[in-house]
Amino acid sequence: MTDDGPQKYTAFTQRRKGKKFSHWLEIGIGQLGSDGVIIFHASLDRLPIGGFDGEVYFVPVGSQPPPPPEPQRPGQSDEN
Image 1 (tube, helix red, strand yellow):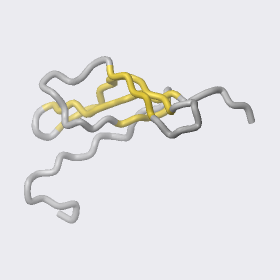
Image 2 (tube, rainbow, N blue to C red):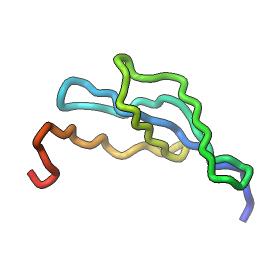
Image 3 (cartoon, rainbow, N blue to C red):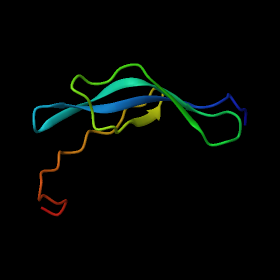
Image 4 (cartoon, rainbow, N blue to C red):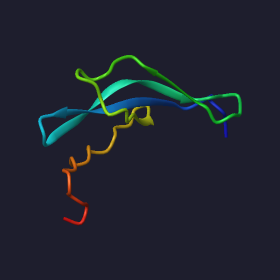
């Protein structure tokens, strides 16, 4: 097995479109530290207009994130 260096990731966040819909927006890159210490380096080069909730989802470069989850309403649980 060869070590090609730290694995690189693409950073995504959710961008809301109305109350019911959202999609993933690519916002930057990230990679694990190569010094043997588990440190994740991220470089965000954009954010959604109007801000975001702070959640950043990293997937390996070339992969796509899963479909965004349905928005939760106050008083709504996963069982409803």
